[in-house]
Image (cartoon, rainbow, N blue to C red):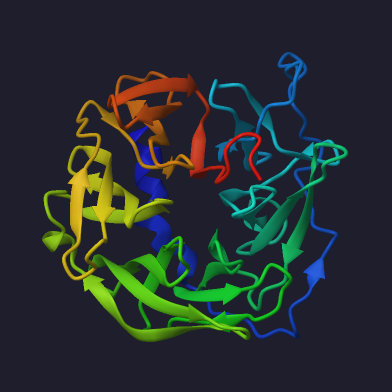
Length: 346
């Protein structure tokens, strides 16, 4: 499992060697392809009641399929995300603030079109309980790492720069122009800041961009705040990649690259000029790298693996008791997110 964890973060550079292609005005394509003929296995029948899609994640479905999206509730019941009765192929999924849509990356390279990665949107059909999926027509066929702000803007990465766009395909704009690789970017909950994992050609660091999204597009408003990894408090990490921004406070879950593997950390940005990084898990006997806050910030869902060959687990960590409850042995890859509204919420 150590090999999987190290592929998830340090080799992200491989994705950003291309440049954005020019295209006509953005529009939505409703003929997006899916993972054909991939359905839930017959020996794993669906539960009597539909799974509440609280937790959204990507898991490996095999060499011929690649990565598919799945849902799980807080009791560990899980099912594939389906569209037209077939699995939805994708990674890096993030909920919209309403909890009725999500955005994700679909990597076409695993089948017919090498090096293409598209931004996709899933929308819940209340009548069928399935998800309609559309491709968001951004200017490049190689777009990654989407995230959906509470204010209705989607950011994504093209050739190492951060771009933004509305879910209807309007307002597309390039936000960063600094020539560095800025990946795994995450919106603050108020939509005024973006935290990104940045490589300047020699070292990784974190960079906090300040953004204003007006009626037409999103633009930077001031110089970004640089955060050298060596100066980030007591995290003691060789690499730090942002994961999920808390709902009620200026804290960001991060994956900490350590000599022993990966831990989870919390980066406190209440004072951006003096960020403090705290190692949350401190577990040399296991590794964690994918995580998301619950809607009330009292729990965290994350992956966890050990180095003894045991199956990797996805579970919930209670921040009050510091306990971890494994829910499933899913082969989690490339992204996990907790629905931003509670069950039954709006």
